[in-house]
Length: 258
Image (cartoon, rainbow, N blue to C red; front, top):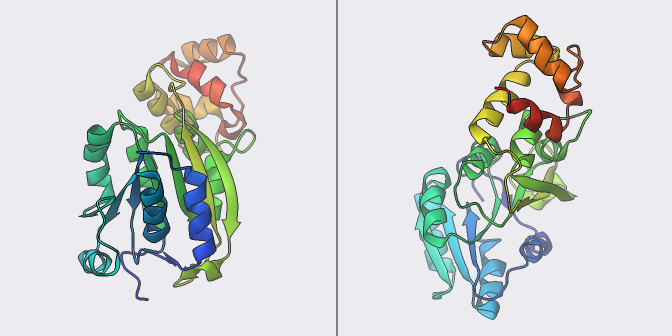
């Protein structure tokens, strides 16, 4: 199978069934699939949807693949295939369905953009199941002393669980690295009361991970050095602490000052 838009197609039926199982698709629910490709995941999704009276919205960016999907998949009122860019289509669909689940074996280059798009949605998916690079999945679920910009950006709105790792042979063409299935459960309430301030803080504090939190914040914020030391002191944070040693709770509390 040729490669489209940097995508590595899932070709292991047992894994596709597992991914559908992780979704726990219930009666009358809607699931949006990212990058349907050749339909390896769409088929078991549709089978589950037919059984549970659910709905599958399959999004595919490549026009040729969209045509192939429409020819190869059964005509069903439980399936809608959309030709479009998920980064542009998802914000619109999220407002249309309000309550939905999200799933996809996504092109690796798309991961960061997609997670940012989801994080900014007013109506986020209740559950998101993604196949991503194993290294990226490990960064998303990381805690101190391995906290990072990606984990801080995602965990403020979702719980993150690495379900299982996948070998290269499960994909065509095989990627150069191992993959992993990650589950993001959207929190009923975002942990930060001021997300813009929180995101500004984490972008600044993780700007140069090898530097101390004091040096990163000093370069990022307009407050004086004395005021910055005062703020860190109130939070019980040593100025020479490294960003990766912070916790989510520390970052949320610290963002209130900025």
